[in-house]
Length: 116
Image (cartoon, rainbow, N blue to C red; front, side, top):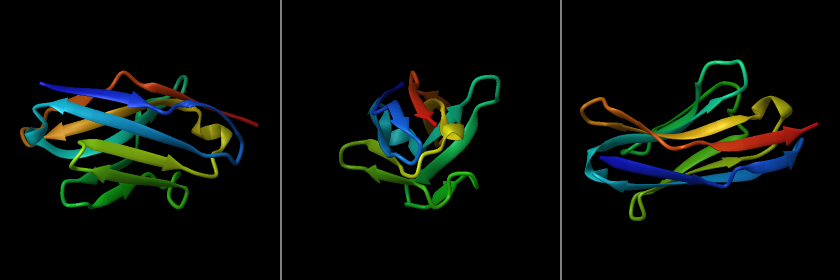
């Protein structure tokens, strides 16, 4: 089993910044990629960014140039630095992990609210 704990959400003004953190524990040797998804009210959950064990990153077009994902493998942490935040970034952000067997694990979610 894998457990994920997120932190760092909150309320920020348009153009502001936030940093999300996610700590993984348990069977971390199974992890092949870590990332962040988000779900806005009335919308489907979507990928914001992810990063593989090899360091390859993938971003949603809507966040490219504004968000940066990073990992600290020694601490089993993944981070999402979010700059130039917009009201449309308002969502619940979920930490996500995929294992070598294709299993998905999710954190409890952290709310990010960007006020205009």
